[in-house]
Image 1 (tube, rainbow, N blue to C red):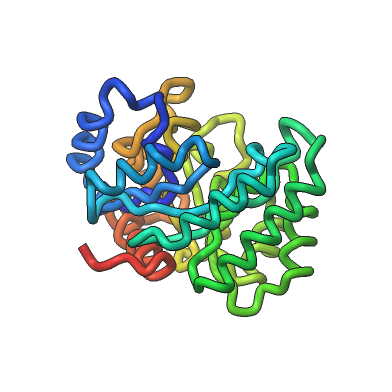
Image 2 (image 1 turned 90 degrees about the vertical axis):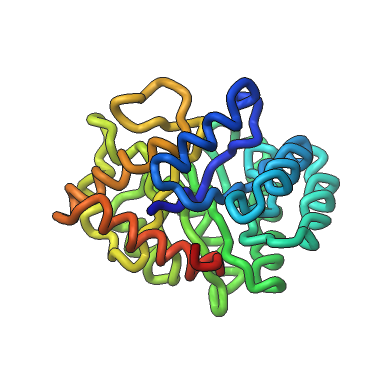
Length: 257
């Protein structure tokens, strides 16, 4: 069995076949789907999905760094209102993204710090998006303090140095389809991830694993990622599934299924 710890199934990319896609995920052995929020525009779809699939879909509250604009305070207030959502499992996704646009770097840092505060306030794990921003991410984390903080660097693409810095701060590592890409160095880094810190994710509809690269991603492809990690760690895909599901249930306080 598998747990997809990061997937955006509420997006319009799944509008035509969302129920069938969820059935494919179940058939592939995916037992839980964790849904990070993006911004105020994604809230309604996220909450509807969690209401219609209780026990399978689990909501998070947060503001994605690429949605940090001039109205950041308003967006943060709307995201904070989600902290009372029943069954909330995480704060995110949050973090910093300096790949697309550096215009709001200071606002991103402040929004990230605010959401770190939410994680400390609620005791929920933090789901961190870090794209071309590891130094900035670590500066904010260390300024806020990581004592009592837990979470995951989702869609990890760092090197050995970044991996060690994440592990030293007590965080988990989220691995998705990037690890299957031939032009990625992630497989070499992934060999050094302690198995008790490893989580699997799809980040659907993005980053579909080989042989589906370039197409819409979906949770049913999670076993392909598990298979690659099993190859890297000289285990069976089912063993990776068992280990990462246990890690996810512990980190996100999910019930045994």
